Image (tube, rainbow, N blue to C red; front, side, top):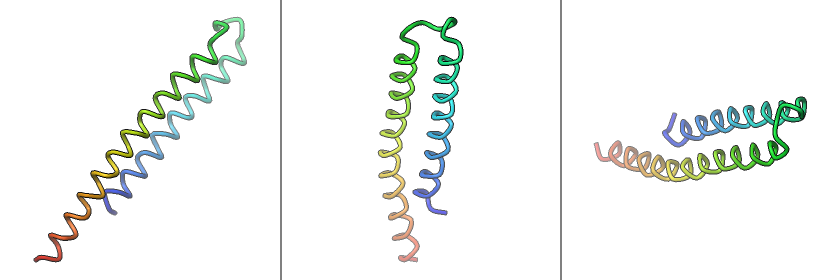
Length: 80
């Protein structure tokens, strides 16, 4: 499996995990409105959105690095 494919798989798993946390916290806030602050949903949305967006942007940079490394490995294989 190429490094690009492994990175994409890892990013999908991590993003799904973060989405699950987001879903859990949103449901917790709706189920217990007396135990959370009035801006709980907005804070959770901003925080989890920032975390997922930041991770996705880091993943994009890592994807470019993985693609370059895959290209270099393929070139070194053909030279042998």
